[in-house]
Image (cartoon, rainbow, N blue to C red; front, side, top):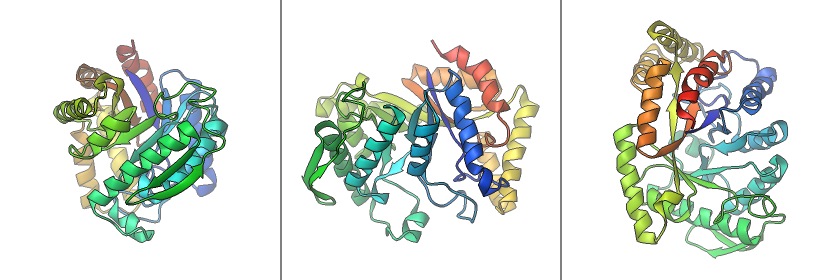
Length: 339
């Protein structure tokens, strides 16, 4: 199994109490830890503007600015967003941004893309909040623009949602030109989301990677749906890498797991989240699949591998303050699952 690591950027209130002049140092330190090791193939950020579980005045750093910064400050890990919201940026513009980041990084970019869902920030930033059908229609047209710009150097599309007329991408990304990349897309495209009628059909046509549920039964069902869409469009189902995101709370024993869960709750309280919301959050977190001892997490991930999940993207909420959970994963979990 392959692994990626989320870098704390504030969206999930994971920089609380750290002064802004230390944010970059903190984020870059976690990225460097992954870059210097050999467990994590990639690092990831979220594409959001307002915090969760509630919008607040706590920091949320912008995803594509961080992509460029990580491109210049790391040398090995690949760089992804889970996931970019198509409607937050014109897709032709975003294709240009991505090509530049790919060049800065030496050909290490992944394009995570989805339809978007966080209504509060959509409306706050003046994007409205169109129907799910429109958001997914924009996703479909946008990934076609990406593919054309990265593989041919220009795109023309008179679509329902986007109109581009000879939009040029010069230079093209290194991936697919002077460096290995996606045969179909140049920069590998990750279609995030599990919508069975539309999102997974878009994935069947365009995706190099998919990203959906960390719940085992749901993962298997959506894999079957994706396989059906692949058959419909003439795509080899096995050519799409299936991935999942996991909230990891890892401890040497049950008591240490509980200590980490308590820390997660305390972090939200320090950010002003109500006790009721905190208690719901921690109760939900306690039931998630990658919460437990190394032996328990290995068992969960091994089962997911048996269901066809080849790549796990891991989030450790405490990463900005304490890397011992990451280090425990590296020493006690990853070796059981890699090769």
